[in-house]
Amino acid sequence: MNGYMAPPVQGIGESEVYLKFQDQVATCAKVDRPVLIVGERGTGKEVAARRIHYMSQRWDGPLVTVNCASLPQNLIESELFGVEKGAYTGAVASRKGRFEEAEGGTLFLDEIGLVPMSVQEKLLRVVEYGTYERLGSSETKVADVRIVGATNADLQKLAFEGKFKEDLLDRLSFDVLFVPPLRYRGDDILLLANNFAVRMATELGREDIPIFSEEVERKLLSYNWPGNVRELKNVVERAVYRTKGSIVENIETDPFHNPYLPIGQNNNEDTEDPYTSLSLDSLEKAHEDLDVSFLSRALRLTEGNQKKAAEEMGISYDSFRGMYRKYRDRLKDISK
Image 1 (cartoon, rainbow, N blue to C red):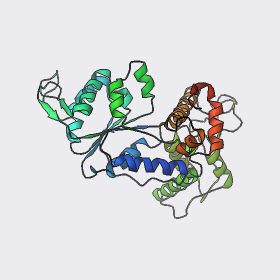
Image 2 (cartoon, rainbow, N blue to C red):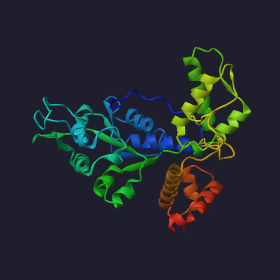
Image 3 (cartoon, rainbow, N blue to C red):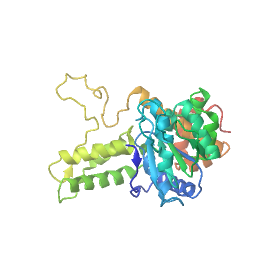
Image 4 (cartoon, rainbow, N blue to C red):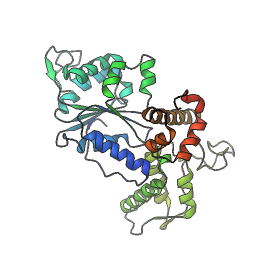
């Protein structure tokens, strides 16, 4: 939904990789520059954007969000910059854009990679010079707004393909924060799951605190979570809702599993364990691409030092070496 965003909820997590990410968020919040948040779907990019705003010097200003994926491309320009009466058929009145609404605060552009090239030109001017015009107007307005962008796309690849302006990418990427996928966060999965379970039980008016069986905990920790925290929340809430007592003994990660289909026709019946099954090939490829992006950036930052790169990512050296061996051919001799 587009519009003003509510104050953030405190993040939940104790893993090294998560705490390191929160430190990065706190650090970049203090510097009034554009920032990009990169992460898979459901990892909490919007939550990170809220924390950046409320920890910044603009905390008492508006925080406005635009979901670029939800807007028709021909309306993004007027949505961002506003429109003058008569600018086009149907423009019966002048209207403020999101930049004006966010004046003195932060504008969060979710899925910024979907902004059309023509609009990117105007965005570049705002970032570089702090000025813009409403659609259909020649009056120049000054923008006192911090831009926070978020994406699950590879903007460098889009820029190479001519689908995203390199100049804009350069100016937006004063700092780039990579949100760790849930599968990298270890026991944070159980912390989050317990939190979601208690909240769901409260919503249902139950007095007993839900408790996961050891088998369910094993499944929670072993599943790949392609939808990350958002998927975990749905799975846990559904499990608590379906559980009659206080002990949660079963979870279902595929809400579309049809028990009445012939054997072999459900999506996950060709795997040994539905809780550890991988997603569709395209989604798995996206996971691999993001893993390679994490590795590449860590190696660049540490000039190819693999031990320091592992520390940068917040994972053990053995885990790093395993990932490096897996993607060696794609890393193109980045490390020494």
